[in-house]
Length: 219
Ligand code: AMP
Image (cartoon, rainbow, N blue to C red; front, side, top):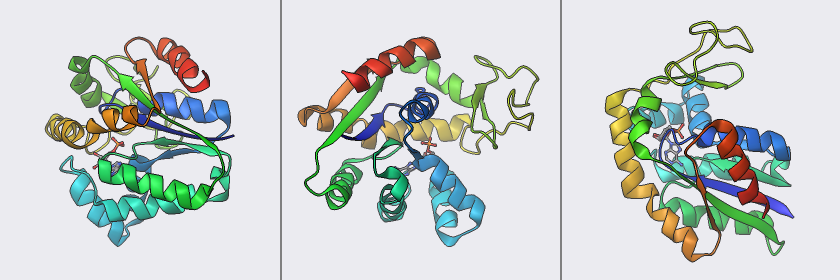
């Protein structure tokens, strides 16, 4: 059955790391709206410029812009057997949009749709964000404080220089949390009411959370 997995949780809760791993495990595409938007910015397009003005403030990019990108991405042939969708939906409006997109793509075919909520102690998250780095080539995520690369600022795998996201500073991070609580957190109840929510304890090591995630997507 086609697997459609979406993920909820505050910024820096570990979704990025775990969902990339999950995509590899199931051999499904990892569709990550944050990365798609950053690629749009890097391309220099007009949509990229619009997206940047919202991302820089920690606000949600307008729904029409993200919706168009997502619809196109989820309709691509490599999503035929399913997708690991990280970062969308982030509001009730987007959740309703996703339902509509899925109905258009899947018709009456049965799907395994789950929303996995990463439940985490939020006090550590700002600290995680401001020390976060990632490899521009392979996407591996490091943390200067909690998970440093072997050689400072260099990816262990690719040997290229690690980058810090422009929105990973304290001021924007606080705005991102505010956006999360106001617009995204209500989706936990939204999906619980639909009977498709799976909650996992996202505290602990990458390996511990991975074991819990595997259970949540398989049982
Ligand atoms: P992320 O990489 O998931 O932390 O996302 C970085 C930023 O991209 C967010 O703070 C938003 O400004 C924007 N963004 C990512 N996903 C969405 C979305 N589904 N809707 C609107 N904006 C988004």
